[in-house]
Image 1 (cartoon, rainbow, N blue to C red):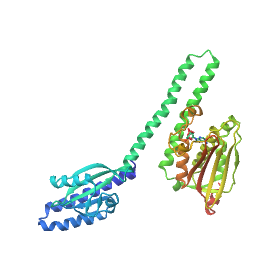
Image 2: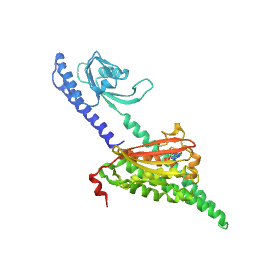
Image 3: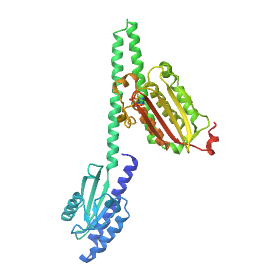
Image 4: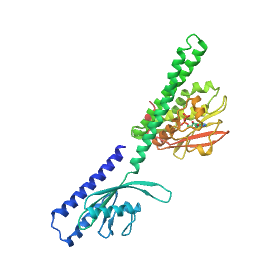
Amino acid sequence: MSFGVFLAVTSVVAVFVAVATYLVFRARHTRLKAAADEPLADIASRLISVLATAGMVVDNSLTVLRATNSAIALGLVSGRTIRSPEIRALVRETQDSSTTNSVDFELPLSEGGDIRYLHARAVTIGSGVVLVLVEDNTEARDFESIRRDFIANVTHEIKTPIGAIALLSEAMEGALDDPTRMHKFADNLRRETRRVSTLITEIIQLSRVETSNILAKAKPANIGVVVREALERTVVIADAKDIAVNAKYPDDIFVMGDRELLTVAVKNLVENAIQYSGRKQAVGVGVTARNGHVDIIVTDQGVGIPADEQSRVFERFYRVDESRDRTTGGTGLGLSLVKHIALSHRGEVTLFSQPGVGSTFTIRLPRLVDTAKENARE
Ligand code: ADP
C-alpha cells in the first residue's frame, strides 16, 4: 500500500474511532432523557459534515438525518433513504446489537461500469440513532493487484534467461573440443546475460520514475543534446542492420526535466524503430517546437503495430509478438518507461502506426522558454 493511501485509510479510521468514542461516551455517561437524543444526532451530523469520506447519521426508522456529499455522490443515499442494501442491513444489525459492526461490499457505479470496494462501519449513538462511516478501499486494492502482477511478471521474465544461462553453461561443458559450437553457445550466453542486465536496468529506471518527483529536481535540458546522446547509444544496433538514422533537430530548444531519463526515452524509441525495421529501412528522428511545446518524433517504415494493439504496447511487459521478442531480446518495458518518463515531465507520448507501413511515436513536452535556459549551458 502506498504511503498516501495508508495515510488516508489511517486518518479515516482515526476519525471514526474518535467520533464513535465521543458519541458512545456521551450516550452512556450523560443522563439523557429520550427527547435529549436529538442534540446528539445533531452533533453527529455536524461532525460528519466535515468529513471528506462518505458517512451518514440514521434514525431508528432508517431515515437518513444527515449524509456527506460523498455518500450522496456514491449513490449510497438519496434524499432521506439509504439506497445501499448492505448499509441498510448493517444499520439494522447495529440497532439490534448496540455494538460496532462493519461490512465489506462492492458497489457498481453503473450497470456494467466501475466497481468501488467499500468498507462500512456503524455504531449506535443512542435511541436507535446510528452513525455510519464508509471507507473507499478501491485504490488500495488496485495498487495491491498491480504490485502482485508486476512481481509475478518480473519473476517470470528473469527466470527465463537465467534458466537459459544454466542450460548453456552445461552445454558448453559438453562442447569443449568443438570451437564452432563453443562460439555459438558463447554468443547465446552473451545475449541472455544482456537480457537480464537490460531487464534489471529498466526495472530500476521505471521504479525511479514512478517513485521520485522528477519535476522537483528538474533542470533545463537541451533537447538537441538529448537526441544526440540517444543516437550515440543506438549506433551499434543501427550499424548491425545497415540503417543510417536520419536525424534533424535544432540545438536551442529546452525543456525542464531530467536529461538522462529523457535520453533513455528517446533512445528506447529509436532502438525500437531499428529493431522492428528490416535491414536498410529508413528511420528518422525530428524535433519541432510550436505553441509552447516540443515534439520529438521518431518514425520508421518497419512492421507497424495493429490498431487493436496500439493502446496496449505502453503497458508493462506487453509485446505484440512474443516469439519475435525472444530473438530481439526485448523486455516489453521500453515503451512503458517512455510513457512514464513523458508523464512525469508533464508530457505525453502518442503513436500512429499501420501494419506493413511503419510507426511514428511522438513525445510531447512543455517547452521551456527563455529565463532558465542560460543556466543549462554547463
Ligand atoms: P520491447 O522490449 O519488447 O521492444 P517495448 O515496450 O519497447 O518492448 O515495446 C512493446 C511492444 O511494442 C514490442 O514488443 C513490439 O511488439 C511493439 N513495438 C514497439 N515499438 C515498435 C515499432 N517501432 N514498430 C513495431 N512494433 C513496435
